[in-house]
Amino acid sequence: MNYFTEQGLTEDECRQKIRMKYGDRARVMIQKSIRIGGLFGLFSREGVEMTGIIPRDYIPYTAGSAASAPLDFQKEKEKVLAVARTDKTVSAQEKADPIQQKILNEVMDLKQKIQSPSGEGHPTLARIGELLDLNDFSPGYSRLILDRLKKEFPLEILNDYDRVQDQVVEWIGENITIFKPDPPKKLPRIMILVGPTGVGKTTTIAKLAAVFGPGNKEGRPLSVRMITIDNYRIGAKLQVETYGDIMNIPVSCVDNYGDLKKTIALYSEDVDLILVDTIGKNPRDSVEIAEMKQILSGCGSSAEVHLAVAATTKYSDMREIFQQFEPFNYRSVIITKLDETIRVGNVLSALADKGKSISYITDGQHVPDDMHRAAVIPFLINLEEFKINRDKIEERFPPI
Image (cartoon, rainbow, N blue to C red):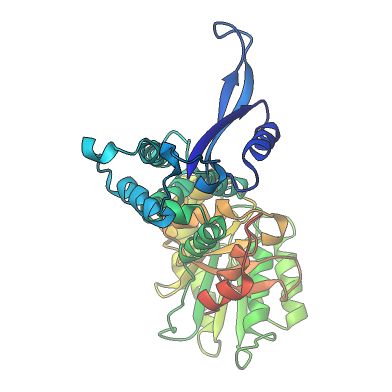
């Protein structure tokens, strides 16, 4: 095994030089941007430098030369990797073979670059970082994935890109928590939907009513009632009443704590599920949040609160929404409008950062067809430019 370093103005030019000089068996290990040409640092141009290795049998050895002694490639590789893992230095007696010493030095340099926080590292790590960024994962989430790769994967496994990216997909799946509701201690079960304006809460409430009521595929249709306290948004009351008429589900409209408490008590005798739609709130308005929380206390302490957030919300805003709605003690997050984005890293990063679980996903306007119980698979198959082994991830993350 020997090493090489080549430079070019573009990646294609550099790779062409390597191919012409060293053949198809050359393997690039490190790639970085450099400045080429110029005088005293002036007039230089952006370029690319690639460093890699080639098999020892490529070099034309001659009889009697120092390099002509046959080498056991596997043993030499094991020696090199052992040094790279343990950071042991080589004593003067062990430096007798200059070729081996060059290889050891090169591997040590590669290891330092891979572990360097500066961003220069193994091509596999660089590519994984690009994919995480492409999918809108947060810098912190990406850093945790890359640090874990550096810590757990030795150099020879990092060279196997497909294996590494399969592992990254699995780690992403492991970070997704699916909400598991507890059996209601008493009927009716009360589900409250809160969230900012424009995330589709009313449509989601209608979808939930259809899923549990006339469209229930997991058992008998439940007796469902809908309550809305969104009397201020134009058309909100009419919208939810229209859904109720279509599904033959009674709808009540209230606007204060007392009326909500009376309506809940009225339905408590012969109803399985009560769904409560709320007014969209600005998460930064703590007064509005407090007022809504006071009204919703009329549902009683056993009510489940779920936070609706649109998948199109950027990562930083989603984290703030999660934080500002904490006073409601929401049990899970419902991700809406998944069909309106091709990237889910923002959602998964925010959920992981805040330790939140997902209960439902909506991906369209059709009631109830576009409402689904949350699962890991829909998020993984939406990872852009990752090679997804569908059979493998379905075995690893079966629906709950």
